[in-house]
Length: 317
Image 1 (cartoon, rainbow, N blue to C red):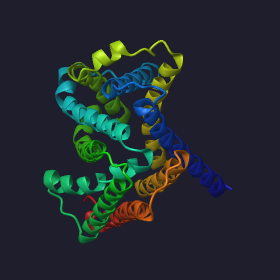
Image 2 (cartoon, rainbow, N blue to C red; image 1 turned 90 degrees about the horizontal axis):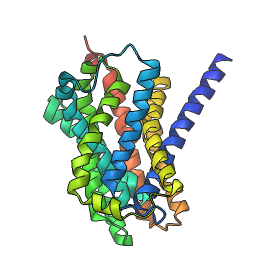
Image 3 (cartoon, helix red, strand yellow; image 1 turned 180 degrees about the horizontal axis):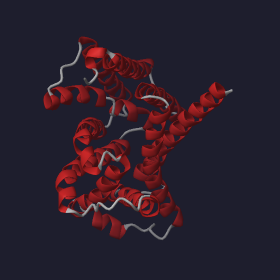
C-alpha cells in the first residue's frame, strides 16, 4: 500500500512539473511576442517577472522564515551575491529573448547547448576532466542542434537572433549552475534565499537596461496598460517563473537528479509536439530527427553522469 501511495505521489509531482514548465513557456511566448499583448519590451517584462518573484519570496520570508535576519542590502551579501545575480539576470533575459524570436517548437533545440557548455565550463573553471562517453554525448547534442538550425533555415523559420540568444542562454544557465555552488554558503546553503537575493538585485540590474534600450519610450507609447487582461498575463508569467523553480526542486526532492533530467527531456519532447500541433506547424522529417538526436544525447548524458558520480572513486572521501 505504501509503495502504491509513493508511486502516485511521484506521478503527481512529475505531472505538476510538466504542467508548470509547459505552461510557463506558452505563457511567456504570449507575453513576449503575441499580437494579443503587442509589447516590444523584453527587458521590462523580465524586470516585472523579477519583481513578482522577489515580492513572493519577501512575503514567504516575512511569514514563514522570520528567524532569517540576513538582509540583501548588507554589503557582504551584495559583494558576494551581486556578481551571481548578474549571471542570473542574463540567464532569464536571454531565455526570454530566445523565446521571443523563435517558435515554441524550436525553443528546446535553441537552448539545447546547456549540457555542452556545462562540460566546457567545468573543465575551464573547475579544472575537472570529462570522460570520453560524456564528450560523445556532447557531440551528439551539437550535431542535433546544428541539424535543427539547418532545418529551421530550410523551412524558412530560422531566427538568427533567436538562435544566438538561445546559445547565450545556454551559456548563462551552465555558468550560473557552477557559480551557485560557490555562493550558496553565503546564505547558509538556503536555495530559496539565494533566489530571493538574485531576484532583488536583478530588479535593479534591469532598470538601466530598460532605460538604455529605449524601452521607456515603448512603455510610454503603449496603449494597453489599462487592460486588466494584460496585467493578468504579466502577473501570471511572473508567478509561473516562480513556480517552475519550486516544481523543479520538488521533483528532484521526491525522485533524483537523474530522474529530473529524464523527466525534463521527456517534457521537452512533449512540449515540442504540443507546440507543433497547437500552432499547426508542418515540419520536415529531418527537423524531427534533430529533436530526437538532441533528446537522446541529453538523456544519455544524464545517465552517464549519474553512473560516473555513483562510482566509489568519484565520491568525496
